[in-house]
Amino acid sequence: MRFLLDPEQRDFARSLDALLTAADTPAVIRDWSRGEHGRGRALWSRIAEAGVFALAVPEEYQGLGVRPVELAVAFIELGRHAVPGPLVETVAVASLLAGTGHAKRFLPGVAAGESLATLSREGSLALDGDAATHRFSLSPEGLRLAPGHGPVRGSLDPARRLTPLPSGGELLGPPAPHALALARLTTAAQALGIGLALLDRTVAHVGRRTQFGVPVGSFQAVKHRLADAKIALEFARPLVLGAALTMAPADVAAAKATACEAAYTTARTALHLHGAIGYTAEYDLSLWFTKAHALRTAWGTPRECRDDVLDAA
Image (cartoon, rainbow, N blue to C red):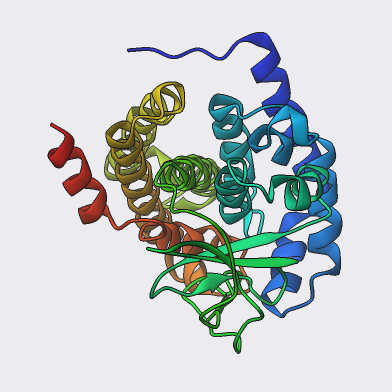
């Protein structure tokens, strides 16, 4: 099945791409990795002004209504530019709070970009707990507002700063399985954008790099690797957009597994074709490469997602 964005959605994607291109996101990412959040928060505010977080907030709380397709479009661009911060967690929290009596307390700030929210599931670490305005934990009892956070721990992706959240805290609402679907959808879209960026950068690199007097990109073996990555990403795209239309848990799980595996495959191809320079933290490729690896297991490993698809069959 072929999914085509309408003109308004395409314009939205182009406007986000222009905003993020002008923001010099590699510098923002490196600041964020060091715990310096000033430029990241400024970028967060501009993303909010573009309406991204409002797409996860009902209209009665100053949002645009929950619009999963537009959220997927936005998160592809956020992934394409490797924007740091608890992006997925913020929209998941908005989904969780929308059906509670605490929505008015938190959601206007989320929609306006004034609040960064992070969320952890039982037994997992929270992303960017040190930068978040509000920290939430999800347990079998429901959604709780965490009273603080523990020390920052490193991760494969330096821009993903992980923190434990203390147990307890104010109980805000009952468990809501639908929030996992939105978290997985936006993670899948983000991974798709990362894969597309890695592919674009690698195609440009092999077009510039020469061996034996010709561009490396002219070699058949290189073309095959890039073609495989392109096919994997293009196969993932309709699954992501289709899942955004249905929001069926099995569809979302399939999109998450496929998009994250495609991004992971593209990251490995990019690293191989860049050679030794691809391994260096100073080279911008690493900012996308490490994020592709980290998102592969965020909000569900490939095996967990595949099991969810099979269970629904």
